[in-house]
Length: 181
Image (tube, rainbow, N blue to C red; front, side, top):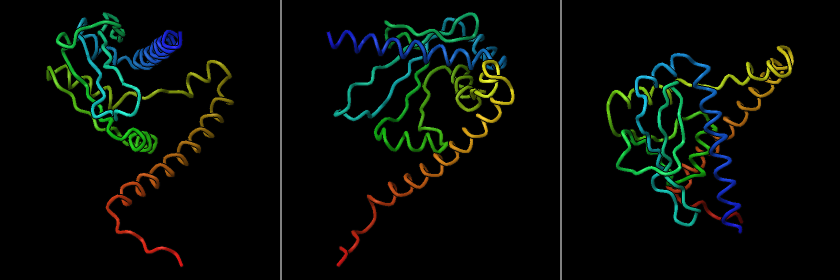
């Protein structure tokens, strides 16, 4: 019963993530146009080096639709993928800290060069315009203030994340500090 609930929750979250990704793509006509060139092609998203002590992270397969959006495929064969996007997951905590700090994760893209170029462009250039979406719900002025507050909060998180990443990078190779007396 617990496995069924876990599976349902994972599916539900993934479906919402795909909806959000498609919303962001649809808001940028150049992004949808780039994907329309690859209708029907398959992309496999893999997380490499994932620690064994964490729950398994499955590979995810997506197909490009005629609208220039992505569709999640529950069951696909790895051999059918036209493009593989591999994200380094060997240190998930450090990866999240770096992502929060505004750094792009380590990504490797293999497959068709033209398709890879367009996917790489999407990764580098697509951003969610949250303020615009908020303005549709609460109006322009409150959305602007919420975005200003969110921006300040995000800058603080990025600053803290950079400090944590610097500490994490210095710690393993640093000489042992003398104990306090």
